[in-house]
Length: 640
Image 1 (cartoon, rainbow, N blue to C red):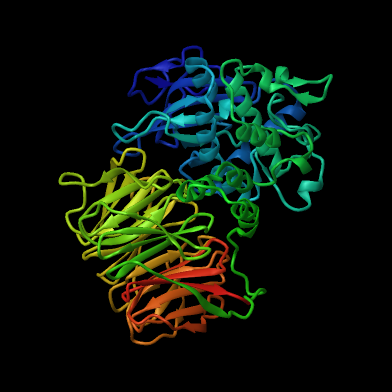
Image 2 (image 1 turned 90 degrees about the vertical axis):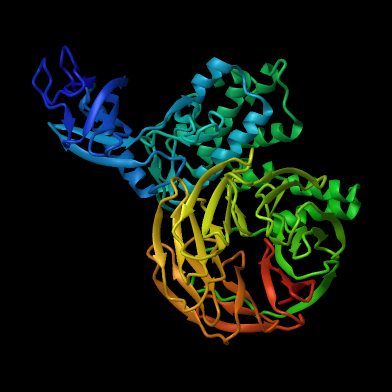
């Protein structure tokens, strides 16, 4: 079917291939490519249509938003026109994010404005609630963990959504065969979004949003970033109770009473406290950032630490808040700030492996360290005193790479036996083996990486391929091919949108995670590229090879700096958590620490007696772990 877009057309339905409306004679194609096929929404200021893009061979579905104000007054019409235009601007500013609809086009035709967006196939959460009933605590936790990074992303672009509610959150039907429905949440409708600057946040503006979900300050026209967190919190208590938010607040007592409506669906005290802080009336008592909420949701590593040790000592309980305070947010590199004098000293040498240590990784809170070795084992160490806590066995050949999941619950390992294994950190139990004769790598796995949201694992291999796997069940999602030789390393960008890979073919490639499309190939090294790492802000990419270390600009692949180095092979590279320093392990048994701003070598750490294969900074940037062919791991601490 073709649907006529003329607002007053009496018979808008037309045959599928028609070019002009049989009733009013209007053109049925927008910009000669977008064909509306079904009316899916209508309001006072326009209509929304399901459509197809006939300019592409696959004729993918999309959404057309048409703006035409009905007789509701000049001021209202002008306000609506501004919001409509604003939605296009905001979506364009946000660029491409897998959990935000992509803006495909924005134009005028026949005296009407149009906005064409990516179609998100699935139910919104209000529909899901009606169909499935109240959400469980697990579902609410999953919702928060999925959406909070999206909220942090839009806030990092100085944008306040201002209308977060169940109707504007869609559970996308997965495009991958066999994947469970609704595994990804998408935030839609940026019509109310506002660009926030330092002065704009102090100004009183128009009250926009849905009354049940808007924060008190937003109702007064002064939305702030925490206003979005309030809307998300109110969304959660509505999904838990199936009761209108108006009824969940006692105006006589001036307090939320949402717990009274849980009935047979109680939540833990921990989640209750988080929700209460999200929906606090005073912004000063509310969470100030999405990252802050995520940290409150993920004290799991602390529990894992207790589980591994068996008891929670008073010292550990006292240390937990300090550990949280020490975590630092990724910083944009600026020339105005230089790191203090770097005095690094070795505080622990960890012994226990019998062969070459290939990989080291810190847990998200920096309390634990994992290491993988050529003898095929993984060891878990306590960072504080270097004590070995557990040894994981199961691989039949050397372990080339280890990685913690972002929530600290899982550990993944990649091996020369061509497989990836997922381990439960708290028990050391092997949960699953990924890969095999039919879907796995055909040669050894060289490196693995968790996506920032913890849903995916990327792996690379001697077989010249990169594979992306679903963590939940170990199923393959796609295989990326383009390198002409062994792929040595993979790394996700901090926002999870991009994947970088490097190869023995002397190139680096950047891939789009959403669809596996190769975006660019970076050349410049004259030997095998052994390791790549994104800076914490995602703007830079560092790579190491035999000879120079190079730093590249991610957005266009331009080389911006070459660090002077010797002729030894460099096997690994890592940015500090603030993005100011770079460390690399070398074939001459040393570790070099560089200042990113100007490429100056500021320290050379000596102590290993064989090549240093792996380096990793702790989350607070104060500890560096290094793994070597001398079968040891060293922990270096900065005291200045």
